[in-house]
Image 1 (cartoon, rainbow over the protein chains, first blue to last red):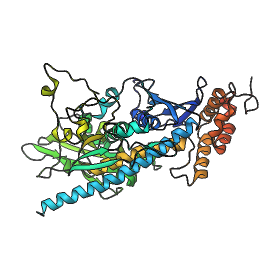
Image 2 (image 1 turned 180 degrees about the horizontal axis):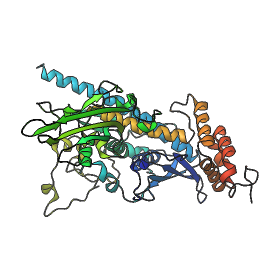
Image 3 (image 1 turned 90 degrees about the vertical axis):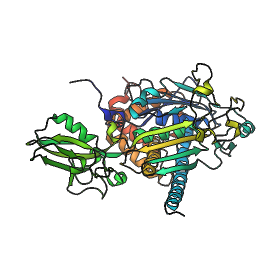
Image 4 (image 1 turned 90 degrees about the horizontal axis):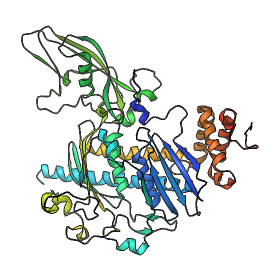
Length: 124
Length: 394
């Protein structure tokens, strides 16, 4: 009998819990706060950096409100030419395609390296 | 700077506090002339600073359990996310439940169960051939989500009998021809030692191996270590080295990494405050459960899945925008059927935050909105829901 949280609560969404919750930040124009559930710095920092590469995004930052809760909040402000949500979607899509390139490049390079190694073993 | 961490330290080691950054406002010209350019530097019509060609990879070394590669033309955060994903979120297979049928050895049951859990089992192809047990609808251990291993040893002669991982026998069918086999690398073909038995002692167990990730328990970690280094000459001044007389003489530098980049990053180059890291040196060492290239590829896939879930969660359609309607339909179904209170939460947020600024929820897909509204308003929507928005109002 302890109050230790279950390890899987770090990454499994609870019943009915949503991955992303969007809230408008009424204090500033074109600003949204996205709350990500069951995610951590792995995704938070990735998205933050990607959003900052977009010239139309004027502010992007994330925080993990408490280290024991697997959530983070991403605050995004844009210059108005697109909504924060669109900016975030764009950032996600760009990252996915980046990772596709990375995967392809890695496969190519790895196979090449393996061929070189085999060649060496066979004394070529 | 070199970081080589195991997953458990991870949560404390990385960024304990908020990271706030303001968008970099470099002119395109400044970007192009920057010392070591992480990104190609060009803007496309969308206004994105895109990489000219996407990430570049150079594999410097590849052996059975180990791959050493350099990542270029990408951001520090993507490289670090990949490192974290490989450490903690790549699925492998491990023994998770142990049924002790008979244990008359000197080791307690829990001790043996723990040791069994840590034995590396071949996990090649567990993604996508194997299901997570909690996602499988069999309700128990079926051949799609579990591998059963049995061990039955009894010492009947004088002396000590060693029980090795090779004594674990797979029973029943399994998801593919690799999954669940103990990884055995020693010349004698024994594998890790599990226990020692004296004459008359017996050990009989039945183990269930399932798929899991290292975030749940470190036994599922596919890597023994992930070496990660950038900016070996500390040109970015991300590190302030402690020293007695001279940091240069007292701190080790890996010459292979230090001489990798151009002269801009050489040890005697001037400090450039606008520079970004350009090359990331990875050294992935597996434990034998997955091939090293598979660890990297699965790490990439994990990140992509995360992003896809976000896209789906925001109602942005699938990756390639082909089956937009399909995705929206799924979202709606989840909102309406899944759990009413949460569905309402979404509506609350919008109604509350967006008062007087209705255009701002234009982004939500129409299908999604109706589903949330219909399902949710009755239970929780009341306090906030503005009249005329499905809200009842007290």
